[in-house]
Length: 563
Image 1 (cartoon, rainbow, N blue to C red):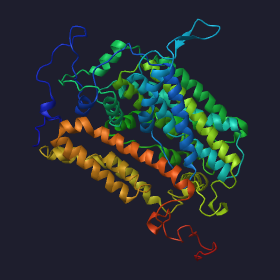
Image 2 (tube, one colour; image 1 turned 60 degrees about the vertical axis):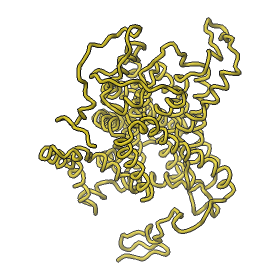
Image 3 (cartoon, rainbow, N blue to C red; image 1 turned 90 degrees about the horizontal axis):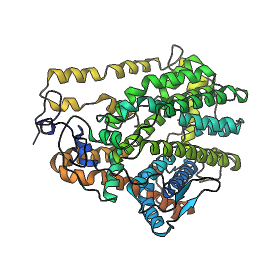
Image 4 (tube, rainbow, N blue to C red; image 1 turned 30 degrees about the vertical axis):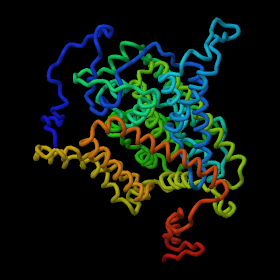
């Protein structure tokens, strides 16, 4: 049965009947779960124990191990034809028995650091939820990938040029860590606000809740948010100067990487500053879209377009600019998402910051080290024509990145999408995208009784269609079938079941795919047993002329000549 809504689209059953003053004395009164988002109220606990230890030896050991392992495996498999990507959900499940094992066997005696008054315990007590969350944050850093490795790979494997390892490492580190500053600037709007609820985090929150057998609280409504009150009451916030100082250091190192080393990266200092300006301009709107819809628009194409017009003929400058513009925003969104996860799980913000910082450094170093090792030790890496028949080291993802550097950097948007190009009419889609939400808004005003009109979200539709080229039809059929069934039908008709099991099911599906992919690789694929062979499984478009040139007069073997 459809629920009644008010003029703002909020179900009347979710609204408070009476506002009562909030009593901050937790010893004399219970907190109320007054999050304005029902999915958060159904999923996130309002209980907190600020006495639980967080940055323990177990946190550091298991967290850094998980971060390094995921970084190595994801980078190692990224060069293969059938790449494998392991998510932090896998580590989230795997570290629990390890943490409990360490709590059972490690000695509880304090260990003193020689020459100092500092000491710590290898075993401060039972393995607790907050340790588990911080280890998962470490794992998040290792599972998210390092975009700058694309640049290092195409320079060495496709352009066959030398790049100084220090320049490559500085590029890797600065692109990953610039986002800390942007996260610090916008965390008040994108973390503290209860309306920025970050749907993806509820998957991990729900899995933590089931694992640790947290009980569901009773739900009452108020306009202030309980989670923000608890965090401000129990923990000190991260000082803003931490974020600003780190940003200034990273900007300085980025300038050194781009202007130093003989200008190997081709991007001048003004390019770095322009990329930063683009990120700051788009950060808040993209952050709001991500925090409320779980869809994250990217700046990669718009960055390539801008620098392609301003600085044509320089492919490395193009991809470096894109990386500073695109990845620093993605990293900022990732940091904010992790902060919101810590917000929900009541993790001290300073502990979160430290774990994120160390995790980013560890992940960047391991990703870079793994890629550099393979690029310098493996013959014909990323060159299918020179590799043995059936070799998996074909680098399809890096080939796409290389082609993008040619299209946007060498050829340039002027000769592709400008007055000298064949695709100038594609620019109308910028106008279409800008105006697309307007008809929906007009219809919602004309027909206010049609509640379904308000559910049409053009940024989500356009963003979802943007993945169509990478995904197959099967991906979309499975996604929309599962999504509609559980998040519309089950959510409306069986809400208590949805609250208990929906996000656990999501975690199980993710973890199951990851574990089965690892099992299949190490038991079958490593022995060249790849299952059935038929044309539908081949990573081929089955169009032998697809790679042929279309410009007049160019002759290539097995290709027609156009006149």
